[in-house]
Length: 157
Figure 1: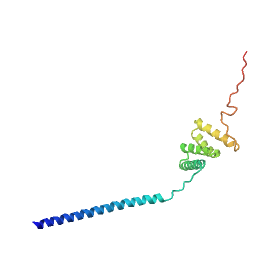
Figure 2 (figure 1 turned 30 degrees about the vertical axis):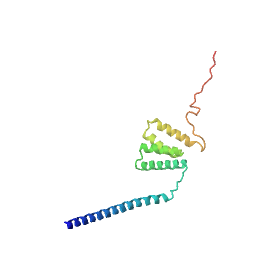
Figure 3 (figure 1 turned 90 degrees about the horizontal axis):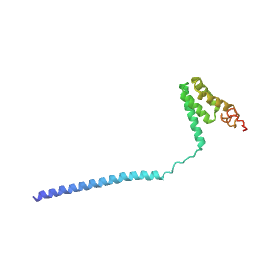
Figure 4 (figure 1 turned 180 degrees about the vertical axis):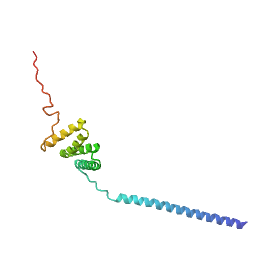
């Protein structure tokens, strides 16, 4: 019987060693994976921050308008009568200050939609703006002499 108990003790001792070995292995694996992640975080924190470039908002807006105009021109190469692209191109050209460039898409819109008074009015306004010398503010219908009603003073008896 004492032999059996020695065998049980040996088994228990082996199991205990095995459990201790597995616990140590698990702890080492845990610490290794944690330290690997921490090294990555520390290394990332030590890298210099990317340089932030500040752009002039007007230049950024101008670049965006040019990109939009180019996109509409690409659509019009495939679909020359696309009203959305024609209108978008005209608006982009006007916002860029290119009144001459806005005339052709507006003319095409008037040709495609002869009953749309908004396109006709926009075309006339752009043509007037394109005809003015550079630096002169475009005349709006409200400031032209024809648009402002002439009032005559009335005298009371």
